[in-house]
Length: 67
Image (cartoon, rainbow, N blue to C red; front, side, top):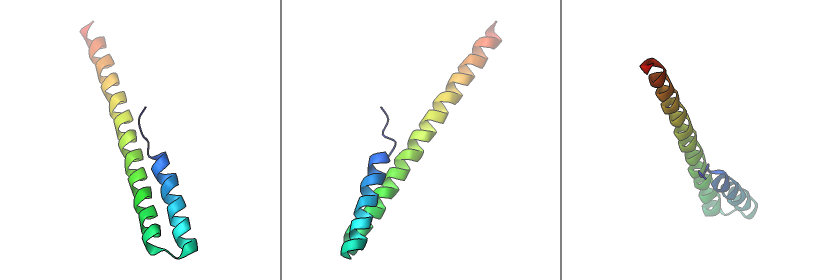
């Protein structure tokens, strides 16, 4: 199963909120970084899914043209 970044985004949001509540700027910054990592993983997974779909469609089109 592909990691779509959900866990990183949730963990990051929790750290960010905790940092806000406790006035811990380091924890808040870690949370923001974790959320960015989660978003990057989400984008990567989306690109992978789209590219796999495009490859499949291209294969289907090539197979049709062989007939």
